[in-house]
Length: 309
Length: 287
Image 1 (tube, rainbow over the protein chains, first blue to last red):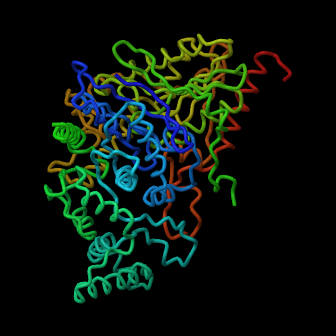
Image 2 (cartoon, rainbow over the protein chains, first blue to last red):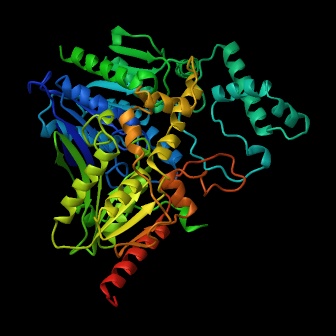
Image 3 (cartoon, rainbow over the protein chains, first blue to last red):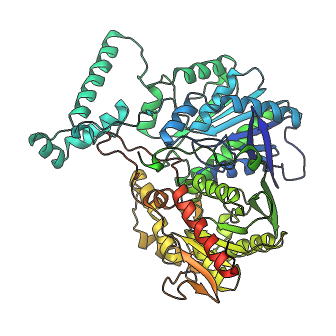
């Protein structure tokens, strides 16, 4: 059973859906509810209706579940920027945090909750993690699906030299991957010999490689330049407070390398700080393909039940 | 700088936002989610918006909502909804087909037409919604019909959507790579195929065969009721149909940036002008 709701939080009117617990009407935990946030610019059901499916499964397990659209997204009114990259960057910097904190407060009061498990996918996970910064949120758990630790480059890219045109990768890992592709590409070699190389790509790759080597040999433990330090601070705060956390990510070499570059340990549980990290193979960032959608619903329901027991 | 290169502020003023109502309609054992964008005062007309296929829905949602708000601001009452098994509506996707989604649209249309005061009803479909809207209109429902980016047929649309499956296969490299035709053969053989989180069934594939828009037939009007396939400018086609790369990308720009909220008011204005002109002509009003 679902209900459409609207809540005014921090001056914004937020549209949402409540999934009422099903079964015999008994709540698995009468005081703890699940709140899911939008995925980037997507509406609150997420791509492939994954958000809806998780909330349904949580409700079937006896948990009151909420999903809300942040301002301007989904059904919620509000202003939006011209470009997706801008809103991604804004979300990563915590633009949705005040609305989340106020929304949590409203839900806690309205439904007399002991606390909330807050979660989301990608950008939704980022906003969820920022909930640790608010003393108003009675945070009982964090559900982080494919959290993004890097900050998106929101520079619209002013016209520059033609050599820059093909540069559409951001991070060192992407550049490295592209390097091996180009190494075995006849077309790339032909362009290099013809003097039409993507000079900016090679220049940045050279600089980043030099910095990486320098870090390795000087034993400095720097983070990648695009690191979202505010988010990592929130991560550390959650671990210090031992907030129960379930992280779900894609089990791929590049994704593992991505998290490790931020000194996180994908796939490894930390019982001491109540962190569980599940990796799902044969799927993509949207966590739908290869049976991931169904698997995640099962993991979340089981994890929520463990919190209430 | 073109008009479309700036983002647009939220079209709804605080007062208009209060006119938006989200709720559920009962649909058998399921719940049909809808949002009604009411007009200030008596509406000039009521517009039922039939959205695209499930896997396109999240990517078209922002401009679709903006369009509904634009209509409301221009004095039309707009209703949009989610098909059963998709988005906010309940139900399992694999239990649905084109006929059940057409029934959903019919249910919403009945509800909308029962509202007072009376006003002409316009059916507007986007993508798969255009196929369903066309079907309803040919059954004698609605006073006018607007179609945006109608696929050739239901099967053609599903065939195109299988690109998503191929894209995932390209990344995930399954042991046995299949072509679109092989996936279609699986469906025809009764084997479900998972595409972007939705389980496609033979029932879905079979039902799609009965839905197509004949652009040449009944040009301009059916039983005296006007209809049109509205052309979209490149920006609107990109936003509503994913057609082509970002049309606002600056020449020589280093990176491909993705549009989120460009100004689509020119397209919106064109459609509203068509509706107003058509309705006034039909009613013989000099307005």
